[in-house]
Image 1 (cartoon, rainbow, N blue to C red):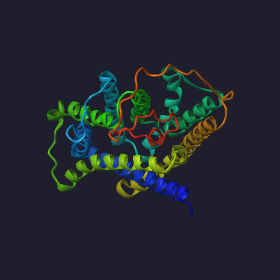
Image 2: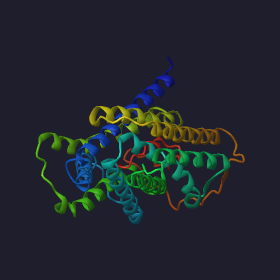
Image 3: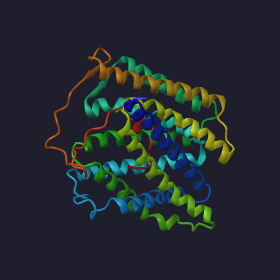
Image 4: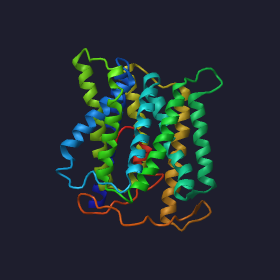
Length: 337
């Protein structure tokens, strides 16, 4: 086996491990929501993640960590991530794991739609059609008008929109601040904001398992994002992107083992439509990168960002992540980094 092939296989394995961690995160959050207020679960997620991150990444080990060239954008991005996390955890309280994940898979659709007016990266009719088909899949899952739709599905969809805007702001911010700076502010802002109303909803954990789960929601998120970064270093984003949809398998398994839930036929059919549409978006993005632009893409190239971006801790310059086929986008992570 050649070295590049081994590297790619290692990247795929790391990607799948990261997605398993994210599944454990959502499972822990859903279980905790049965025992305490959702806001307390969100606080636990940010508190554990912030403390774990602070051990490794802090102003003493990384000089200039808190220096940002776009403070308003940093705060706005962190607020979007917090809103997405709250909406997702609230949806998890009422919906099955596979239902929420299927809806979260629409995040790349929103990114593709919003990247045009915000970043000047317009898509053509083929991907517009794929997005329309994907949203039809969401309608199959939620079944509005048939009396079966739960209002929490709207929360999950709003969370996907918030996470899409968060991803776009991440791309803009990557031209100004280092990845470590952005990571630090994400966890700091979430921890501080959720700490303010925490006394109003706080319920002391009454068993060790609840305490362990509160730590786990932060630990799984932090470990998952670390594995995701390692996966990106081993394999190209185009290789990793299709594997984001294996997350639905983890969700179905966890939902059955922990909560006794199994997806119904509507959810299976709708998920298949959403996943097929997402895979087509990935295919079109890869085709765009490997061939000259055709009628499927009409880019309006925005002016370059003023000034050089701040260097990362290793001295390299941060680069803008790819949209909309970045695996981190498709993974639908509303709860970290």
